[in-house]
Image 1 (cartoon, one colour):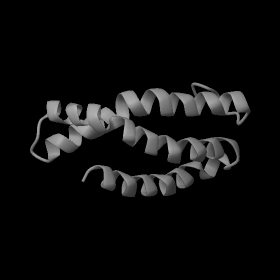
Image 2 (cartoon, helix red, strand yellow):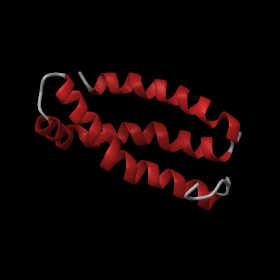
Image 3 (spheres, one colour):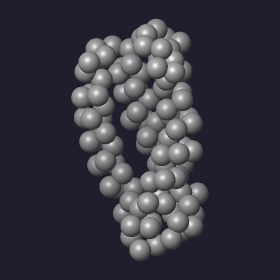
Image 4 (cartoon, helix red, strand yellow):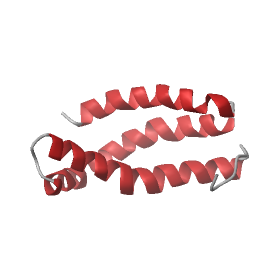
Length: 102
């Protein structure tokens, strides 16, 4: 509710911008790489190094999927259906992440 519940252009753009240009590159993606490294018997430092080397490619893929999706999700998908729609998108993203984690 940080940006309100509306689906106006300014509200939608603020929600998508925060998610894609703050949360994803500075929280979500580094944590993914660190967790993946540690879970694969590596170190957090190795995960961060991999993030520095591969992170921009991953973020481009993330932006290519999630920016159009979230714009539609916050503007045209009914509020009660947004989580279900996001789950479908997340399933697609999990398949894409599997490719990046190889």
